Image 1 (cartoon, rainbow, N blue to C red):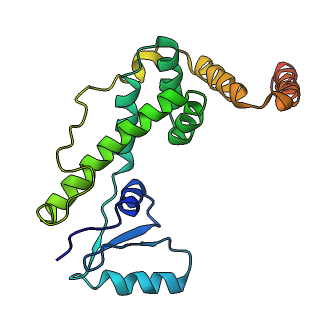
Image 2 (image 1 turned 30 degrees about the horizontal axis):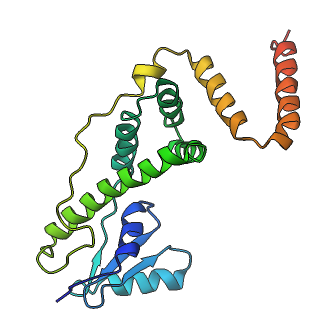
Length: 207
């Protein structure tokens, strides 16, 4: 009977939700096997593992939708209006996860709060998954089963972005990107923007 597992690897597996990545929990050893689908041989090995239902269980990762919801809820806890607005804009549209992480690099305290906040949700997800498998009485995670997920409701991004025109949103996103560019590269970035400005001013379509 399984009594423990590689908790760090299980957490990572539950974060990954790529269609090409598959993770399995070994019910005998507690190891977490990860297959990235990078070769035919690896896929054959994965299929050999998948058919052994009595030993290997496919890990159920938190969905992208759920993890995006966590970001929304976290942003709603930020009391500083200017920072909350910047975070709301960063999670709007494709590439939200990357922009969100890149922005938090500049706010170490907030970033640490985010990691703690996300871990709480992730631990809750793992606990519910283990309970569904009927393992809650034999496998005790280091964080325990008494995990309380914050009950705050998310502030919809539309409460901020709906007040902005599409052009203004793009301008603000461009400013966010400029803030992330090293000072040594700013002259080149500004020159490129001036080039785009001049090109846009002279390109009025076919005459």
